[in-house]
Image (tube, rainbow, N blue to C red; front, side):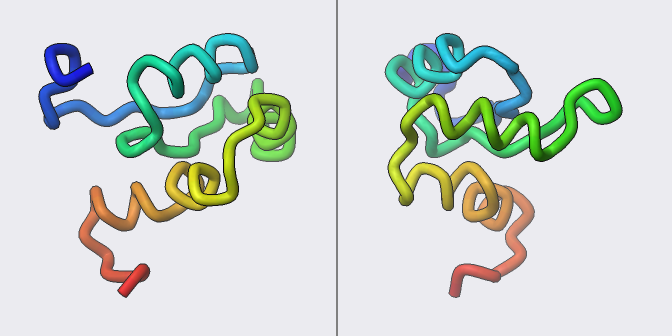
Length: 79
């Protein structure tokens, strides 16, 4: 994992395949994954439905949906 991302890359979760999202979680993790949509082709409700199929933990969903963006943009919301 470290040889791929090396702490420099961030990823978006805009993929309508629960299989791909699971594989990404298992191989890369969720600490640098952020929620995204491909609006107008794939809206937030659709993307959240795909994410529900993955079986993310509550902690993973919080990280993906807002905490990782908070860290990336240094917003200080989680403090």
